[in-house]
Image (tube, rainbow, N blue to C red; front, side):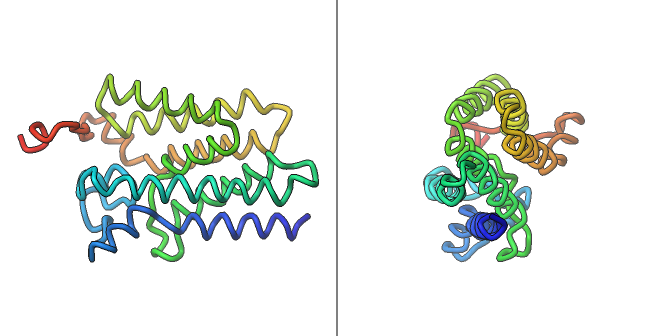
Length: 207
């Protein structure tokens, strides 16, 4: 069992190192982390490289998260711990995304990969995350606030819905806390009124 856990953790962590924003920006002979907020996440990528190449970032970050969870589920399914295996893979891929050894431990904040994890573990949580994020951003235009509330909703969902699976519940809450912690700078700016709002039109962007 312990060998299986090690395999899941290592696989998930290494998959997490495949940061879509960093990799695709490097294909442009650049590094997204040298621009804007210095973060290797989707929002910073879009602000500096546009929406066109963002689909590649989304595909990589969602794909690696789903794959890590599927590997975990597959390995522990026969032992009766399929959902625990999926969550373990999710926690590992989150850590790899946020703190990638291949990129100097400077990664993203885990929201997009968190969505992939939620989709792989329990699609209802993914729907909740999307709804909270879209509604918050539509009302406030603060992507960071939408991300923080989406992360909180992930923790609440697994905390409430998986009381009979304590390891799954703990994994979901851990990922939520980690994602909110990674947004600590955004929280300070939100509280001080200096956080940047997202522009969705080119006209507004140029203004």
